[in-house]
Length: 340
Ligand code: PMP
Image: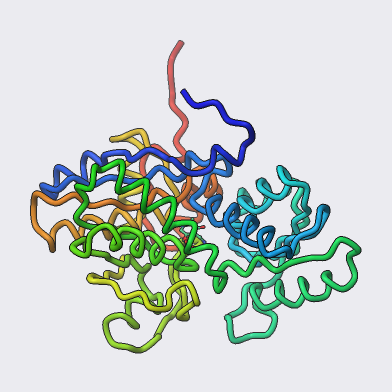
């Protein structure tokens, strides 16, 4: 058992969990990196830690300084827990459409929340752009200063995955890894892990799993960024080439319909005791497709980004599922009848 000096040491070093059904169906070994086991319960704790440490090393943060970020939620949670542990404040700009559970988690951490309407990136009031303006404003008005975490274009995000996620996967598999695949929010996880793994072996294949209707599948298969933004998955589905994605080229690209992703999420609850968020479903669907394309006998790793309780009011809510024409699993919303 490990013994840590602070919660920060508990970030990363997450286990790889064999996804039994996916492995059996494909004849491959498919593993999920259990990022929901981070202290903030998502893969984004890593980005939070590396972005704040990088700002400290560059002398950009004073004690009591404010960290401002635009986030679908998980990065805000990661930043808040790291900031609290190190003596900073966090101001988080989040689109109203994100799950109430993520907003509540941010409130619990003491983050100052600014909820804004969800508008496209080209709109000056998009949450990312607005958070950048707010950071610039607070940098001049707050006596201890403020920084913009800027996870999309801040390479400290990707670097964190080069030195942690990729190294961990390489060690955990004893170098016996043939493929890595995941979806993209900022691209930090995918591009950083790919970069780190490719440094160990140029033979490792990299895949991108994009939610249906998102732009990167179209970009990597046709060169054109075209999207309709229709997926229910949160935290993924990027519409532009962020700085974290620059220089990145996948070997395989897949677009995953919501129905395929949610069926996997629901199935994992009952069959493997894993209750995950929607982006993990997209990732596992991508890993299954990649396993089929590569053929049996390969080891493929993907990311279990966060836990299902973060989406109980949406992904696990029968009314929400029906409103999106998605399947409702029979164990959701039914009350057991016992005669005792
Ligand atoms: N899944 C979830 C639930 C997320 O919140 C995020 C980050 N927004 C991702 C996946 C994607 O991670 P990244 O930003 O590293 O691309």
